[in-house]
Amino acid sequence: MWVNKGFSISTNKEYLDLPLIHSFLSQEAYWSKGIPKQIVKKAIENSPLCFGVYKGEAGKDGFEQVGFARVITDLTTFAYLCDVFILQDYRKLGLSKWLMDIITNHSELQGVRRFMLATNDAHSLYSQYGFEQNVNPELFMQKVLKTPN
Image (tube, rainbow, N blue to C red):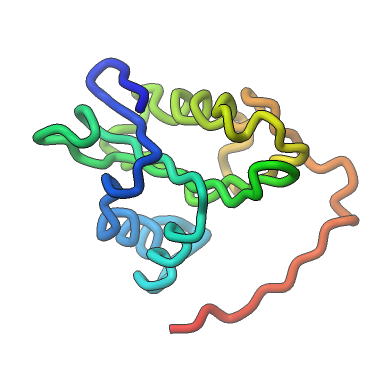
């Protein structure tokens, strides 16, 4: 766990507020509007690293979740950063930068050869942590499937 100026970040999934995460992802995030709660729950369960950002110290009385990020990875060759958010009332406090610093320096991600993400509007944040546009985007393909209900 990391603690700084009245906030904390933890990878302990027991502290995650699933209703809050689902609410943000399904109602506010442009990349996952309408996503069912069961899908969010399963995604968290199957992702080895989930980072909760909390007001207060995670696990202690009165803490509340204010942000989240998830890393899909094999911890060796590939990592994909997704579902990153800080609640509106807690933006402009440096929490997203602190979260990115924690993620990019996490010991289990140091040997990963390719670390990717997709963003519509946060290029300036991620570029501060070494992320850059794909040199050869034509090499990448995707298959988008309809999300089951």
